[in-house]
View 1 (cartoon, rainbow, N blue to C red):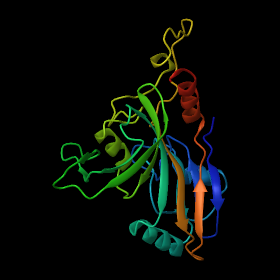
View 2: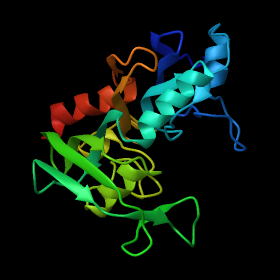
View 3: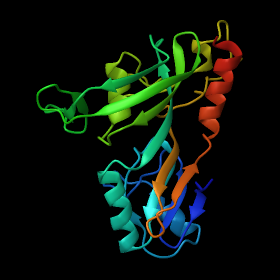
View 4: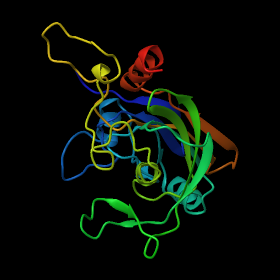
Length: 240
């Protein structure tokens, strides 16, 4: 089955899409479909310019510029921290506070360049605010608002605060989440159990920015995909 991409808002200056998990923001050496590939397959024509990124296994709102002027205007908003983003995160642990700011400088891990770490001396200032939306047994649903845009920022900050993503092989040591882990006695009748979700439990929920031409404030939202919704549905059913 071909992966499809949802266009959330189309404008002459930009395009907002709901990026599926497992799809690259831009083509990479590791291969696999990119956002541009899916949009081309959907018949979207013209050059699409990058203004920010989402991790391959993060779903949700992604903003692309359609003109050079649009790219410059949007990129400038990102650099000035005028773009507001929210993410939904399913995490392990029980947050002590219903809302808090994680203020921890981030730097590239010198031993593993693809990873980021909290580093008081060499890290760049990084802040993520979170609020608890729902609590389950040893699991919580958070809404996160990054005030800075460091690589892997939300993932590293949440792990640093003792509540890593429910699924995150790099910072949480978990590759998948299964119903049997929260439902005692769950059996599949001899069949191998399939995970409820087997990718980062992180979804880019919304993005708010100024239109690059008119300056009008625009908010774009993306509904969580099926695997994210199914995980929450089971947590609400048997995970409390």
